[in-house]
Length: 141
Image (tube, rainbow, N blue to C red):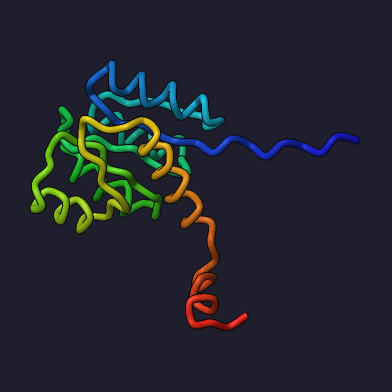
């Protein structure tokens, strides 16, 4: 009997620039993730509600609803890791993004390898039971 493969982790990419959305989706799919794309804020919120992804890659500047409002709305429904991907690189933008519920923030232009590494890290962190790293950090075994 062959063991069943674990289902692919699902990622929602909410990005209005088609070339960037396609490149991000292709790279994440090559890493084994199932990826769906939305091109504006309202359809991004709907996608997350329908798909219930394991992680969201979210552009900050979107038509319809900006990424900050999208993040607020999706976090209100269910806590999901959010990686903001944006051209806005001021410290204020980063602080506001993290303040509305984003877990990480990557500025454009970005390295595909770094993006994948950050996605892996966010998903790994989301899987850990609360406090899993605390005992090791204090030196307990």
